[in-house]
Image (cartoon, rainbow, N blue to C red; front, side, top):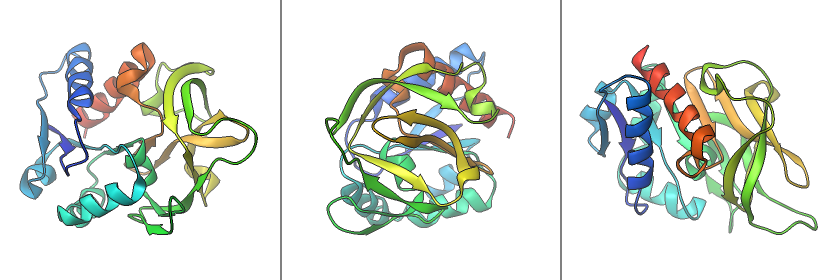
Length: 209
């Protein structure tokens, strides 16, 4: 099975439906399960860490559900992990959103607020610029458009962890990867064929795990 972590952040059914479609397109009957059960999570082929809203609320709920330690176990076991939107941001050391919040510390770096004349939050379609080949971005051309809604961006301490960049006043990391950890800032479930291809690629990574 492929697991979406359930930690009371709101409706993630759209992500589940998009993953189910991506699995069908990959020719797989891999079940997509929404759960907070550590036993199921650690038996899965791949794990999705979703996130919507504020960083502080997401990381607080994740810890209240006793899932932060489970996510670390997922990484130690080599199970593929994909963080989406705030789920990507939580992979890092800390966020500056409305204070100072410690993240999961799986990737070194911080989450910062956009500055400058452009409207914040960034809402709408923007381009992905891959920095190197990776299975998650297979078939995604340079300049492909994805859908974003966010006021904060990830600043990895290690440039090698940046898998794709996006321009919004600055060049920032919109996709990251280290080992069996991936993160995407855009909303793949709202990004039409580009988003479905990214999710399909993750399903295929999970199948091969």
